[in-house]
Image (cartoon, rainbow, N blue to C red; front, side):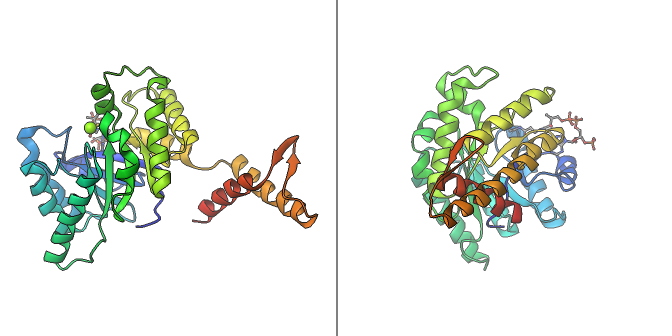
Length: 288
Ligand code: COA
Ligand code: MG
C-alpha cells in the first residue's frame, strides 16, 4: 500500500459491527477502524473484538485499512496493538502523539509483534495524530521518527481544546496548525491528512474546508459520515483545468528550453522551474 493516494480517511466506530461491515463498500481511500475516543470505556473490549473479527473476515478491497489504537501508554492500547498486529492491517494510527520517542516505542513494539508472528518486518505503517500544542511544535520530528511513518493526521477538536482555541467557520484560528502539519509532513516526505468537518449537515462548509486544506498542501481530509466522502474525494482530485494547466506549462517550458531560455510567460504570468515541478507532480499523480 506504500505510495497510496489518501484523499479521504473515514472514521469507522469499532464498537459498531454494522458500520464496520458497511465501510467495506464506501468510497474512502483509507478506513480508520477506531478503538480510541468515540468508543465508550465500557465498550473498548467489544470494539477490539469487532475490529479483529472484521480484519479477519471482511473483504475491504484494495483500500488502506488502519486501526486507531488507544494510547500505548495505557494497558488498553497495548492490548489493542497485540490483538490487531497479527491481523496485518496496513497501518496503525497513534493518537495524541507529542514526541518522536513515542513513535520509536510504537515502532519497536510492532517489530516485536511482527517477529513473534512471523510477519514481514516493517510492513505495518504508522499514522500519527497531532492534536496538542506540544505535538504540533514537535511535528517535524514526529513525522521523521520512523521509516514506518506514512502520515500526520490532524485532530482539530482535541487540539482546539488543548489550545483553548475557539475556531470559527473559516478556521483562521487553526491556520498556523494546518500549515505546520502540512510542512512537517512534506519535510519528511509523508502525507498530511486534515481533521474532519464536524458539521455533518453543511456540505458547503465541508467543501470549503477540504479546498482550504488542499490549497495549504494537505493530501486528504478525514470524514465522519459516508455522505462526506464524495465531496472530499472530489476536492482532492485534480480538475480538468488543472490537468490542462499542467500540460500547457510543460509544453511552454519545453518550447522555451529549445530556444535556450529557462523561463517564459503564459497569459502575462512568468513561469519557470517551480511551475514545471508543480505541473510534473500533477501529471505523475494522474498516471498513478
Ligand atoms: N462508517 C461506516 N458507516 C457509517 C458511518 C461511518 N463512520 N457513519 C454512518 N454510517 C452508516 C450508518 O450505519 C447508516 O447505514 P445504513 O443506511 O445501512 O443504516 C448510513 O451510514 C447512514 O448513516 P446515518 O443514519 O445518516 O447516521 P447514523 O446516525 O447511523 O451515524 C454518526 C451518525 C455521527 C453517529 C456516525 O456517522 C459516526 O459514528 N461517525 C463516526 C464518529 C467517530 O468515529 N468519531 C470519533 C472521531 S472524531
Ligand atoms: Mg482526538
